[in-house]
Each structure stands twice: as C-alpha cells, then as structure tokens.
Image (tube, rainbow, N blue to C red; front, side):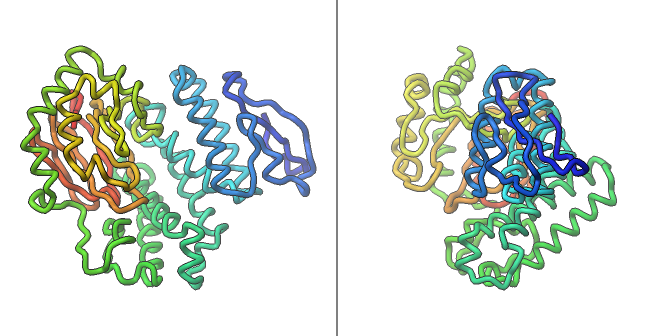
Amino acid sequence: MRLPDASAGALVVWALTMLQVPALVDTLQEVDTGEAKESDLFLGGKPFSSDEQENSGVISSWLDNIMWTEIWDVREHRRTAYSQVLQLADMSQTQFPSLSFAVGQALYSYFWFEDNGPDLNFEAALRSVALHEDSLKSSGCMDLTVGVGTFLKNACPERWLFLIMLSAEVGAEMASNRVDIGRAAGLLQHSDDLFRQLMPYPFFSFRNWNSVYDINTNSHVFPENVNQRPLWPNSAIPLALWLEENAHVFRQDLEYILENDLFDTLYFQGHVSMTQFSGKRESWAPLNLIHNKVTAPHACKVANRSCELLLSRPEIARCDAKDVGAAFARLHPGMGIKPHLWTAPPRLGVHSGLKVPPGATMIVGNNTVDWKEGKAVVFDDTYIHSVKHRGTETRYL
C-alpha cells in the first residue's frame, strides 16, 4: 500500500479486508487527486462517503470484525490494522476532513492502549486529539456564533466535550509518565482554554461549571437548579441501599459462576460489550443479567436468584432509557478502563462491590473511589471517569 504521492499528483484508491492478513490492502486504481472523493476509498469492501456517521460505521464494522476474532490476538496483525488506520488519518488530515471524526474515534476506541496492555498508546492518543479538533473545525462547531439549534444538529456539544476530555486526559497521562512534559503542559492548557472558550455559549453558560472535570451530560436534560455531582450519597438512591441489603445473594451467584468456570461462556452467550474500554478484549467484561428490560436467558438460568431480585426493581427492569441494565462486571489485574463519559443522559451508575481486592480505583470527575465488598457506590457516569487496577487479583462488581 502507498499513500497519496504529492509529486506524482495521484491518489491511490485502496480497499482493506480482514480476509487476507497481514496483506490486508489491495491497490485498485489511481485517480487524479483533483477528482478524488470519499467514495473512491473503500474499507472492507464498503465505500466511504461525505457522511460522518456512515464513515464511522464503515470503520467500526471493519475493526469489530477483526477485533472479535483470532486475528486480533496476533501482534503483527493488530499492528497492520493500526498502521492502516494511521494512513486513513493522514488522508483525513490532508484531503478528506469528513473522515476526521470517524478515524479519531477509531484510534480512541481500538488503539488507545499500547499493544493490548494497560499503558496508553501516546501516538494513537495524540492523533485522536488532533483528528477530533479537525472534526470540530470542519463541522462548523468551532463557530460559537451559530444558533443553538444548528449547534445541536451538528452534534457540537459532544464534539467539544470529547475534545476537551481527550486533551486533558492525554496531557495528564503524559505528565504522570514523564513523557514530553512540555507537550503535556500544552495539552492541559489547551483543554482548559477550550473549556473557557465554550462556557459563555448559551447552551452551557447556565451550568456554573468551574473546571474541565465539572463537565457532565446529565445537565443537558435537568433544570439548572438540580444539583449535578460526580458522587451521590447512597441515602438519596434507594437502589443503592437495596443492593447492599442483597449483596450476599449476588455474591453467591457470582461465586457459583466462578467456581464452575462459567463466566466467559455466559458472557459470550449474552449481550457482549463491543468496545475496547480496556486493553485486552475480555479484561473488562460485563456479564449481563438484564439489558434494556430483557433478561439474559443463559446467565439467569445460572444466577436465577439475582435475576429475580433485579426484575423487582423498576429502575432496571422497567426503565425506557438507553442502555439500562445490571451485570457482573469483571476487571483483570494490571488493566484499566479508558477515560470516557456517557453522552446519552439521563442516567446514574451504581456499583456494588462483590470481590474487591486491593489496587483497583476509579476516578470520577475529581473524585477517587475505592470499592468495598458489600457496599454500593453511586456515581454519575456522564462525568469523565476512568479506572486503574494496580492489584494482583481480579475485581468483580
């Protein structure tokens, strides 16, 4: 595969397929750069277009079809896929800005971690920051004189908040790892500058946010007199107290699953989280018991007491919001969960500690959470949050 050759004035049009690894790329034809358009580029047999959502679907579909097979387990194959996404990034930054958001999201979603481990892939993260900023500009969202209707139609709130989060989190991780301190400081300052630039805009001006880590999207849907906060008192959320009262039941069902080595089998028989929140594919795995009002038949056959209890809770069993449910959540030692924030409010998260070894912590906004067995934690996952597990045993919630 080769990239656009500026000296020759030509663009190589290419396609990627997961069927030939590592030789994933076929050169199809050459066209004059002046005539090239997004539909001249193919990925997995599907053409790109000028539509950002369609482009995101093309890239994520191709990467999912690789990530959830044995192909992803081979380091050489992962690196081949990564190098091709980087070449797409080059194209989006030089010629096809409509690809910027999709490629930036792909780097964040699939290549955030270095070689399937716990460490940040600084190259991928920095490219993702740059591409999200390109997306902010090419979509017109950088223009804060537009009306709120246009601002919302172009998904500008999500673009702004995601870029602010990426800049802050990548900068903080670079600083903590003593990687290019000058650039780390620049990213942190840039994140704060973007935050200060955005706050006067009418869609955000009433929220009284003081720092990047006050950002949350529950405030999109609640009146300004509702107190948004990263952590909630258990006394304010009846579900939290109920989880503590029934923690012994959930723990007994989980222990049965683990003693009989059923976790992975049940996980893959149910609703699989098709995303790379953690470094390795299964290092973070939510074994769903109920999801969007539908119980998981295989899991609930084994954990029937847990499922019966959960079906009694309207917050879980009868809620019409998006992506509602309950799961046994596993995190392997030495791994983490990347920084993220939920962008489809309203919702809260409640964690109940079942097997909580030392070393696993969660950061929500500016707050640090240490789980305890039998105790619940209520948090707003529309704030920026992430997890690191520096311990030696698997954590289960």
